[in-house]
Length: 494
Image (spheres, rainbow, N blue to C red):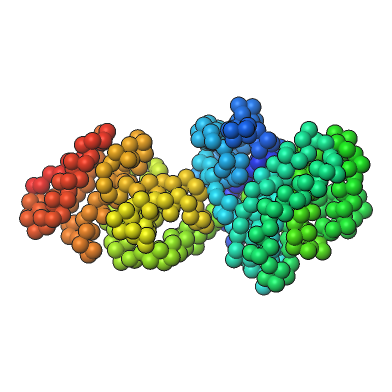
């Protein structure tokens, strides 16, 4: 990446949407601009976990403004990440379709583990370099992430479904602060977070940091009201809770440094924070400057270099964990990529989808660890549910669909095959899998794949068919399978 390159990260959080623009210089990112809008999308989930029309409109209006600021940026310069609210929302596809049009860039809905990884990347990059083992706690609007790390490496990551916004709605309805509300909120938070005490035991880390909105807002409040700056302590939290109870209601709360957009979620944030102090027997928590958006920016740098892209490492880790036959995986990967190259261009998205095809090909036998006969079904399930650092949920789902469709009837892929690029990916993977059936590199020197107007055509010499009768027969079976789809695939032996 060239010095001076502008990069941007968009964080679609449950409380706020944020846009961070930075300039790359010698491995570091210098802030150019930061925009934040309190959208409160998390409070816009109805009882069926669907975003209300008003909540969607607030998000769209904000992203339209962000999109105007990002005009002129290339797709490799921007990463947009959505978290817990859109992980939960049943109608997220409806929201995302319009949102991506307005923003002008793809929006990734990431898993809780991926959110935690990005948070740690952001925090670790903005902390002084050290060999200390760190516990990083991020209390967001609807989820809380905890990460154990050292240096730039996240060692353990977990995401829990509680946050300042969701806890405020549940235990402080209408903005009313009561002693019973705080007691109940803290007990409930401890119940959710209890397992974290073992995962992040005190003997595993030496310093605890708090990132993002809640901890930063509490630290700022305490500092503005006479408490030591740059630290959140138990005594300060007790004092803050007393002030909330004395006010009785968010609208009556008057504290130096408390922004209006924080009043609605301060009760939930304080109760979750107090529960964490109790569970981990914390004396203090140090506010950290980095957050998810900075992690997304540094991840863009990593994705520019194939050897450092965390997704490459994740694919290798999954292949090892599930005992994939690496040689066969690489054979299928190489052939599917070669075939895809013949039919993908000049589509501008071909490069990005080529990488996803390669990852799916390398993991196409991941399900054989469970069952050989139904390996494609098990493999698809694994990819849809595994915690895979670096990948968004839609990326994993597309790979799972490729693995599912690698063999067998195509009726199960009917919906996915509405997408032309997916059809190209799937055909290339299926052809590669069947041509490598003997688990050795096939002779494809006379095979040529073409595509025009919904019609795939594979040509081969008649001599090739005579030399490899089993492969020729499998190709004829494949030709018949595609006749039952909206796409046509024909085999021509010259």
